[in-house]
Length: 153
Image (cartoon, rainbow, N blue to C red; front, side):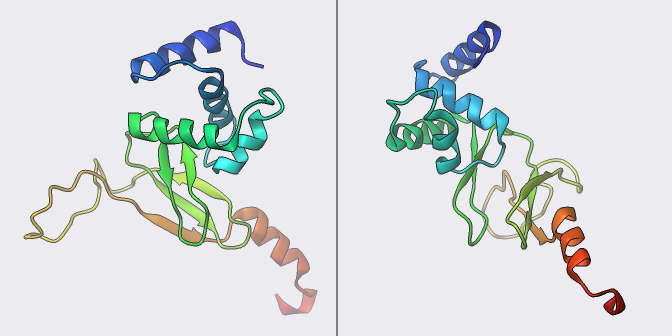
């Protein structure tokens, strides 16, 4: 359960974003802190024990409110359900494991936002760029190497 200091911080964060403080919103914040890149299902599973009256719709509403208010970011890697994270405003990117689906953050390595350049003449003022790297995470690589016969390496 959250301590009083965290509750006060969450209350201030929500109010500062123009959102009403509710038990569901505070619980959703806690779930996102403990599991970055969580799906709505992940968040619901994390909070339903502590808030048995909470519905999946309440979780969707809170996540949508957070994204609209700039408290959370929604990412949608191809072939994966939408995920939410609290790391916002720094134009970071993501790496997705093609083996297990794990998602990690990748800091922008090119420079300041948007850290990529759109072709000249598009007419758009580019504010951010989303990059998704795809690969095999260390755990999947280790598992695959352990499954290979000794002579095939």
